[in-house]
Image (cartoon, rainbow, N blue to C red; front, side):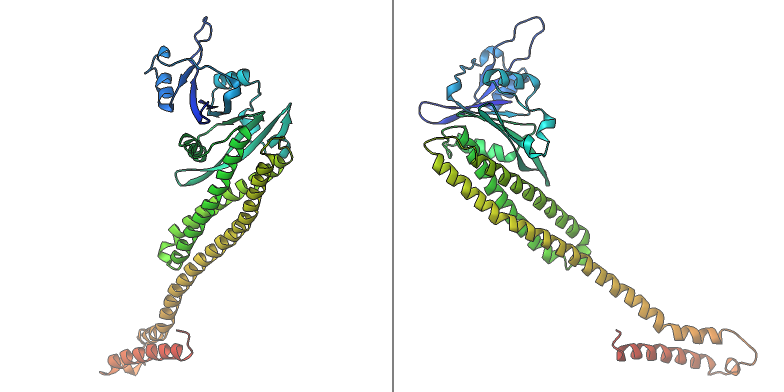
Length: 353
């Protein structure tokens, strides 16, 4: 889906969805249509809305600040490339990790790739988003929907942000990303605090270990995103264009870098805490198992003397006089009880119990 954000005469930035009709064999390409909402765009794609029910867009490049492509197909990528004279990367290029592929100058534009955290259910994920800065315009492209960008678009729609060009859009998005990562770290701390209290209960071992490992994965994604943002912001600082607000933008980048520097030690501490909780959980479980084994060991030792006595009198030799006496049986029972009690008291005296 293609979303254009235009700066209107009233100074407000509004988003509009560009809908490209499906090409028909042997016919010229139909002009794109303009949808005010994602629901209208989805209805047109589903055939629930006729092409002529949506107005054709009047594309004035100078008033477009942000072009956002979410899960674009080849037709949408080709249309954006032709309209805005830019070469969009493919999926493989987005996943490359070397610095030369994630930040480079292309003509008079800047191409960057940034890592954004998001969640699918409870599972932490990261997704690469490509950005192309050219003049006042920002083009972004990603191959999966990201909650943080949905939140950013919602802020634009509610006029909580008022960027004046593509640079301000990108910096505002990166600032929101850093705030989101800080919130994630706070959530991880709270979750680990609860898991620490749960770790002393061996019966909840499986849930505890699962929760600890889940928070470790969250922290891993947060740390990756922080390091990626730190690298990106440092590179952007060196290529800020001359503009009336260049000084304030440079200060904004410095503030974000300071925030990232303050967050990085937290991720290191969380890794240490995760390892401690894992060791503690397994240690409590081993201690509980040791108690169980100790009970069986003591029981085996306590009943060893009575078993020996019972074995002796079970041999039934003719020259065992106790077998012919009336008191023989109660005598053997008493002897077995005394031997078991003596062994137990000896263990207590040695403080082995």
